[in-house]
Length: 264
Image (cartoon, rainbow, N blue to C red; front, side, top):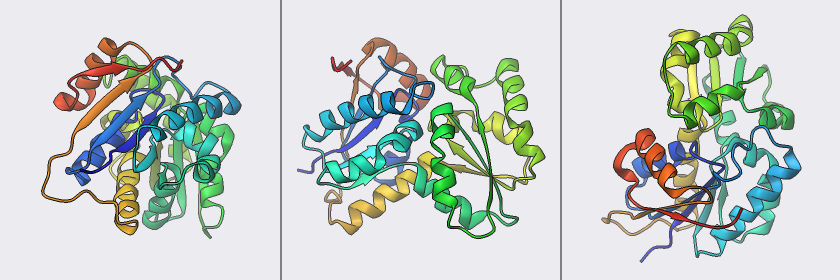
């Protein structure tokens, strides 16, 4: 018997992190909580995000999880330091792993970040890359991207028009590496890659977070015994039927039943 990994997000974007963890660690049990009743976090103040995120993380910590994953850039920006002091278990977030990967792959030192307004205001990526010599960061909030994804719209003329407008300053800065600094954004990889062109490397905060989860569990001797097939349990503070319907559209049949948690 292995305790689950607790994965928390403001809504649906963290499903990209959960999917990446499933791909990297298929034997692990996952307990996912989406705070859809109070989403999106990206338009809220950092104190608000901190309050909501800690409430959700406290709930997961009370479910006997063996590690916590903050699968939300806005929440990571608001609570990371608090969370690592608050919980007696590994806490993995999405910002530092993505920043480290971008610093490693950039060739010209020009790195872009697209993110929510809350993440941009927090300057978390600026802080994460501040100590890396020769890296220049260009940050652009892309608020409509979350709305598109949560409406199940991942392509079409509206999304393309928004992408061209949002990504213009990133392109003009001459970046060769672009961090998808919101876990919703990997679901728009096709559009983003098309607008940026083939010479720009996209760094998914979801993928890099999953690699960090693997490393943390390995370093702490917490990997589930193998071979086994992990179980998946999905919780939401909002409407479970809506969560299941959109969740299946985004990551397929990994989502069966969704339970309601009355936190909000």
